[in-house]
Image 1 (spheres, rainbow, N blue to C red):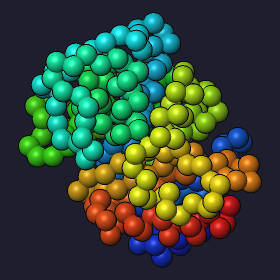
Image 2: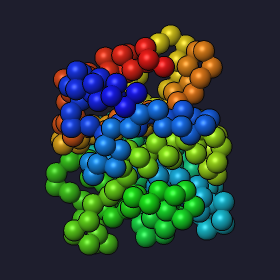
Image 3: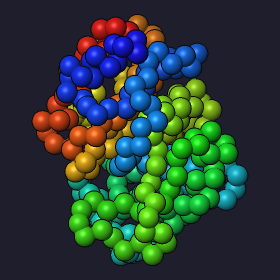
Image 4: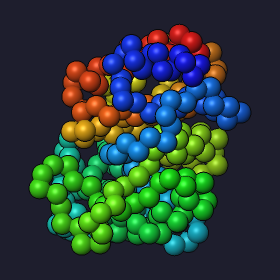
Length: 259
C-alpha cells in the first residue's frame, strides 16, 4: 500500500504530500507517505485543540457549560460567516463544535484563551501521545494577522499527518473524553469539497479540513458501507484553490478501490 499511496498521490497531482492510511480497529498502518513532514497544519490544528479542551473538562479544569465572552481581539475572517461577535457569551462546548464543524477561527482563538497554548500542548503530548503537536499562535483568516501578544514570533503551530491520524483513531475508538461529541461535530463538517468527493455510496466520512494560501489538507475517520473502518489523512503543500482541492476526490476514489 505504501507504493500505492505514493503512486496515487503523484498521479493525482497531490505533491508534495504527507499521507497516512490506518486500519481503525487494529491500528495497523496500511500506508504512510512522509507522515511527519513539517507542513503547516492550518485548520487541522483545531482538532487537537478541541481534544485538549475536552480533556481539560474531564479533569475539572474547564466546564463545557461555562460561558466565555468573545472579545474583539479574537475576531478574524472566516470562510463561512461566524455566528460569534464581540460581547457574545459562548458556551465552551459551543466553541468546540464551531471550531470543528464550521472550522470557525474566532471560536478557535477563544479556545486558545480557555485552555492556554502551553497547557494544551502538554495535554495532547502527555495524554494522547501527539509528540509532534504544539500550539503557538492564534489563527488569522486573512491579512493582516491578528495581534497575538503571547506568540513568540518564531514558532508556528504544529500537527503533522502522523499525529492527526493518531488522534482520529483515538476519537474513533472512544479513547478521548467526549468522543461522541467529537464524532458528531466531525460528521457535521461544513466543508466537504475534498476527500468526500471520492467516497462510495453508503460511506461515512467524519473529518476535518485545513486550508491556507500554501497548504490544503483533509483527514478523518472513514466508515465503509461494508462495515470496515479506516483513518485517512492527506496533507499537501499545495495552495488551497478550487483546482487543487478538486484533486482530492479522484485520489480518494482510486484509494477507495483498494480498500
